[in-house]
Image 1 (spheres, rainbow, N blue to C red):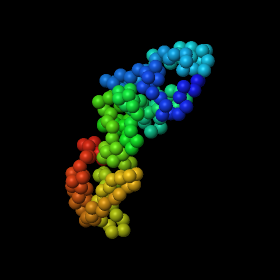
Image 2 (cartoon, one colour):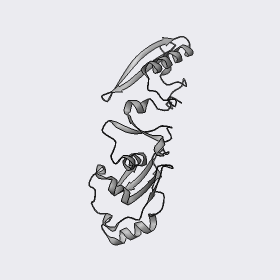
Image 3 (cartoon, rainbow, N blue to C red):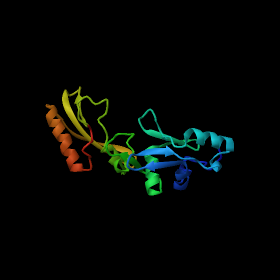
Image 4 (cartoon, rainbow, N blue to C red):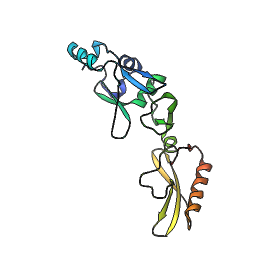
Length: 191
């Protein structure tokens, strides 16, 4: 393969559109018949185009994201969808969030540009959570339900104690009240 791009970030919209096509309604990428200058040798170009042109251009990684391999690099499909639709990569400090939290649903209507804080306000319930509510847990030392809130700022996590409660319901109410006060949480958060 030739050295068209030397760093992963060097992939441009023009190069991307020579490699794949994106359907914003379905979120699917398909490989195109790629120009021979994408490859170091003509026989490699012929082999790759014969095998892959017209096929679905992604596979799942171990985190559930669709990955597309181009020019020696693996790209997350939702990031390529953003590049395809806007002509640019997400700005520093921003990520592409799946609104419905389904990591392989790359329909354009399901993707949004988000800060890390916005993305966290659309997070699933942690697998380690035992209370069933984000920010609420049983404190073994005090033998009470504890409610907490938190956010990220400048790459650091900040936590707030929202109180300790005899009853789980009261801790849940404290957490939900905090979410309403702070704002920005999606209906999917913590489910």
